Length: 481
Image (tube, rainbow, N blue to C red; front, side, top):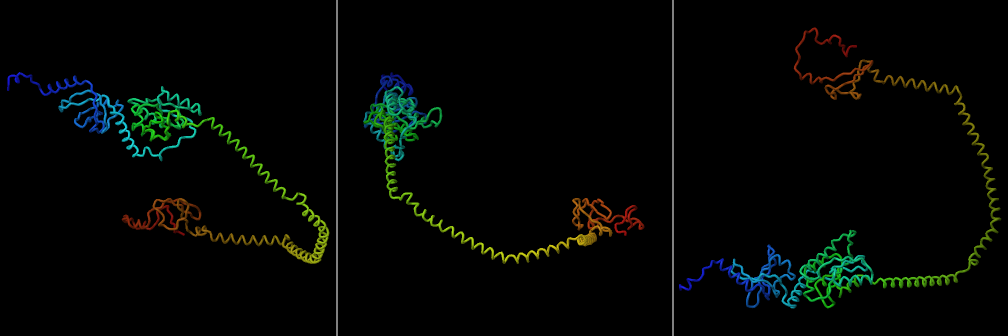
């Protein structure tokens, strides 16, 4: 090793890495780099985005920090040629240099058009531009919602045109129509109008107009963002897009239910002309009146023609009147003849009826006399005496069949507590309250154990023979005569 080499300053790896970092950052504080985005897979879970910029001969690593990424108007996409503005720095952990991007824009109109076409094909494949899903615009909306800048000429043109054609209530949702947050604001406005409940403090629009004045492709780029296109396609309120001039087109025009060439044209499509409607109504009313008059006159003509073919009222009643007169002439003789015939039939019937009436009267008189005989006082008393004798015989028979006569012969009737007669000892439980009826009254008793239960018990000690089989003093026997 030479002396010159030995006199070189000694660096640690970290010292050398950070020295190179300072040197590069001082030499390239800000640069604009053009290249194609490669290896982009979306933001990292941390929110930072990592990818590379390349051309046909070199590759430069790139990073977009989380805070910067959210502010980018143009988000990175794989394969798009862009111009990145930022600082060149190194990453000591892997000994490589990279660009920290602070701004990103497409590399010319060609790159934007390529990106726009690729996005159009992607969204079309999802069916967002299908004609079948487009909704009709209401003929005369009550409320018109407008999504646009509140300070530009666009809103003034729309309000002026609506007032000229047919004044309607207008609700404006102010948004930025250009810039970093424009797309998010427009999408939020469309979804916000759809979230309004009918009948609430804020009226729900019947149709939406999304409008912006003319500009370059970059100026109109917010209306090509997916978030705006998807919000438009999802809207349940019909949407009219009016972005730029007639020659401009954006992806929201394909997703909207109707595209207007200009914001003024959108107002014309939203409402009809009131004066024209009034004129049409007046014209239709006049035509209706004329048609009704002609119809009535035609009916009157037909009625007159039919009336001429009909006979007069005098002619109609001539024949019937003659028939009535003829009948009246014939009626009087016919009545007299009929009366005579009826009188003759009645007289003949009277001759046959008199003997029959006399015979029937005699028979009724005979039955009446026999009945009178039976109703004389002596006959009535005899009938009453015979009825009394039959009643006494029935009373003796009933008394002889009564159970009380059985009780008089020494028997007893046993009833349970409810008064129902008991016929068998098996149905009586020990301890039951019994009512015993004798011939001279009732006795209440309590049932003891059955004879079978007594036999199963041990025999009691025997007493003296003199007392066995005899009732206790003072207790009578049920079987004594």
